[in-house]
Amino acid sequence: MQVRYHCPNSECVAIIEYEPLESSPGSIDCPRCKQTHPLNVSESMVREKTVDNCAVCGNRELFIRKDFPQKIGFAVVLVAGLSSIYFFRTNFMLAYIVLAAAVVIDLLLYFVIGKVTTCYACRAEYRKSVLNPAHEGFDLATSEKY
Image 1 (cartoon, rainbow, N blue to C red):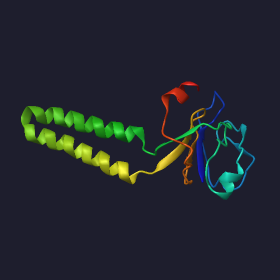
Image 2 (cartoon, rainbow, N blue to C red):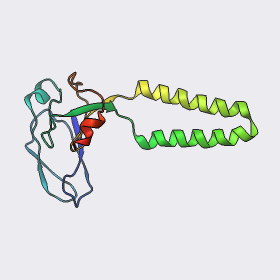
Image 3 (cartoon, one colour):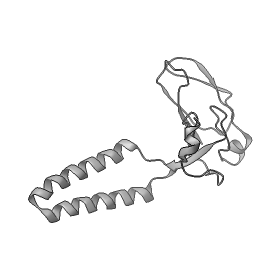
Image 4 (cartoon, rainbow, N blue to C red):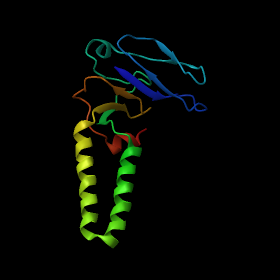
């Protein structure tokens, strides 16, 4: 199991990754600010590789989402949109083909990309773990609490 989170120090912008999370390391030092951060790895994380609470902040409210980089998704939409606008002026059919190709690319990525468990409070991400059936998709009302 792998955990990836932003350093809790407000003055630091480092992203900390730790793998494997099979044993409880107790704490991790930030590579940038050198501050020590505690990690509370539960027994279910060790034995079953299932996330039941956040090891970084201890929060029990987590959600599951697709592990897709949003910048790549934005780039696909931007390129498809701009090229289809161009082709609407020159070749009407080609504009629709570009938009259909963007839909097909999106659909393929949807089935290929895996899922990640994310903490509502600190946005820590847990990869290479068994998905907990108690966690659902993102809920805006729960996110508003944090």
